Image (cartoon, rainbow, N blue to C red; front, side, top):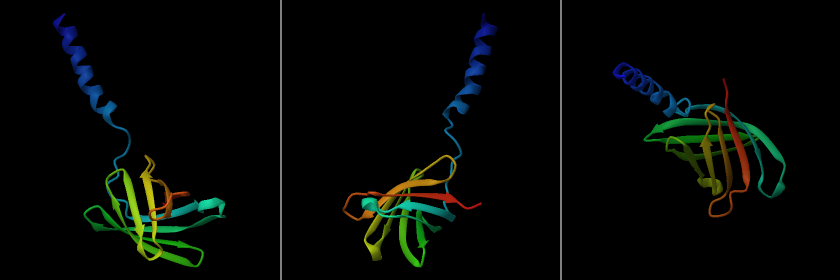
Length: 124
């Protein structure tokens, strides 16, 4: 009986860490991302590129290029959510990190509804 109890406890100890893991832990978002989005209010879809550069303390310089437009902002990443504010355009975007490293989010004018959508997929 003691041997069986020890064997069961051993299996549980080995299984617990595996069950606690949800996927890869990503701590640094620095990189280039292919960007696909929709404009608020049913405007046309768009494609572009977003660059994230860590500036320390969970903060990122964010530069997004769509067609001939470039906007820059500062984002804060808490391990799950990247919250970006593009000061020059009064735009806020909130993205949730996915297990595959992509970021899925919504955006709009700061203080307004976040009605636009965006997906940032890491460029390999």
